[in-house]
Length: 243
Image (tube, rainbow, N blue to C red):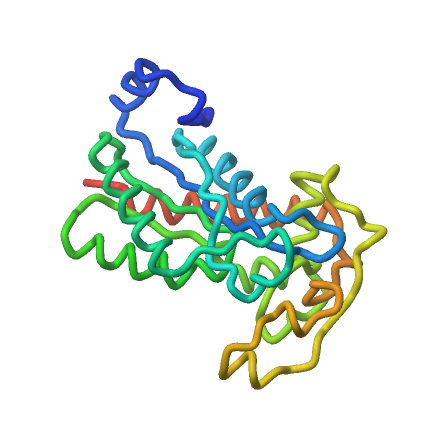
């Protein structure tokens, strides 16, 4: 199977493809700082690549990426573009409605930014209350096990950001955008203000790294991508198969 990109297809090509009721795959990420060694669009690049690889396996159509997410914790760092939860919720609702109306068989939202997860969850639940159209939300499925099998460094209190994990994935898919000379290891002090109030992550870290980016390799990224794709395909096939 091969993947198709909606933005590159004509209306006639998409009409022909829709006869098979393909799965639409929507990458969603964020535009925010990822240390001095990774680009601002890291979450978008990773979501797009995962979406593309999934689409190849399920004969899917990849939709244009939603490049902005909830990035409030980095809002004072130049280059960050953040949207509110309600804005993102309304945007996703409209996209889902359009995809369903357009004749696809299902929609899989492939997320590369953890702070979008809560919004995605409630949007999918609310949609299910009024429609039988399958909408699946994917944020690195089976993350803990897959990351643990490849990465050697601990997370920062469960968070992944510009660390061994994301840097390895970027080395696999966009190596020319990674500057490992700037990769560092940083584990900021625990912050009650961040955990229980409204402190910004941008005020806690000097480098913007939360973890150990110096241990990243393309080989780790390749291994993790392969497993994420396998697990994503399993979920999509299980939740979209009709008897």
